[in-house]
Length: 106
Image 1 (cartoon, rainbow, N blue to C red):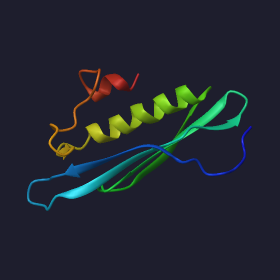
Image 2: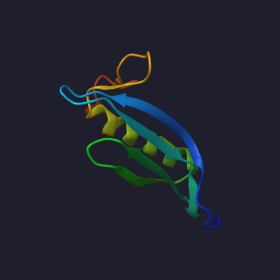
Image 3: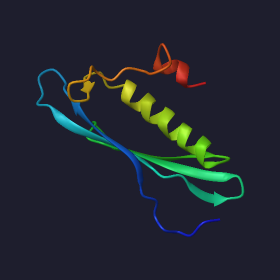
């Protein structure tokens, strides 16, 4: 088991969120480094700020890769529910590797 030092940010992405009739706002997505909690128990935290309500949850796996995968998968699911998200000059957020976000929820 590791110490109780808070994990650092593993990845961060800043998105623009535009909803008809409202000014654009910034959405920040942060995935934190996986943390070992016990034998075959790791967690990775997801923090999304700037949507209608903040999202802050940790996801568990038997190792760091599985916890990180779950965190990324669930972050994608949350973002898929908000049309109007985009990243700079990139096209709007779209599910990656799945036809719909529902397919990600196995």
